[in-house]
Every structure is written in C-alpha cells, then in structure tokens.
Image (cartoon, rainbow, N blue to C red):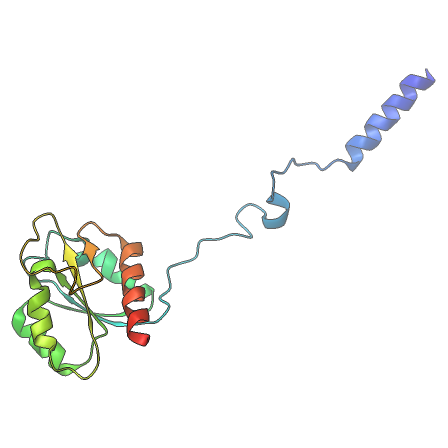
Length: 166
C-alpha cells in the first residue's frame, strides 16, 4: 500500500510540474506567430526608377504588372512608367533616374537618350525568350528575366545602386 501511495504521489507531483502544453523546439522563445513575423521587402538605397513599358515589354514581362510596380514603391523606390519614345524623352529631360528598366530590344535606345548625362544611370534590360537584337551582356552587366518576381527586381536594383555608390 505504501508503494502504491508513494508512486501515485510521485506521479501527481510530476504531472503538476509538467507544462500543460507540449511545445516544440524554439516555441518557448518565439511563441506561435509572436516572435517571428513577416517582414516586407525594403530597399537598401531608395532609387528613382523609370520603367519604359514599350510594346516590346508590355505583355511579355512582369514589369508591366501593377503588382511589381506597387511592390517596388512599397520597398521605397520612386517609380515612373512611360509607354512611348516621346514620353521617355520627356521623362529623361525632366529629371534624373538612377535605374531605367526596359526591354532588351529597347536598351540601346534608352542608352542613346541618356548619353551626355552628368550622373550615371543604370540600364536594366528585361530579357525574354525572343529578345534578340540590342542586348549586350558586356554593356549591361545587370539584367532581369521576363518572368522575374519582386525579389529579383529588388536585388538587381540594389546591385545597380551599390555599383553607382562606389
């Protein structure tokens, strides 16, 4: 009887000291949904970005999607979108842009419009399946695939800005 009473007492004491909820590794530090939360993308250096959404770029790239543009703005970049050569020329005369995103076929057109500028502007061509003429990897060290997501856009823009700040 004493053994039964002793073992029952030890079992009761162990249950009283044991936590009521079993927790996984690290759960005590963070708690579910409390210690680790989603962090939005943030630009290291906010940039003035011009997107030249010509016919070559429209419909073939995620660049022209409002979600990408809104994501870049939420990250801290200032976005301007133009659709034709006249608007491109007017935008480039009106202000300085740190980065210009254009289709691979339009990259040389944008570069010729930027010649003679006092401050450097990084040109980022968007390379699609059918982007043949006008794109030279030697001339444009940074590029994006047509299917790129917001993470790739931010990474390339950050790389261009880091290069310009050197």
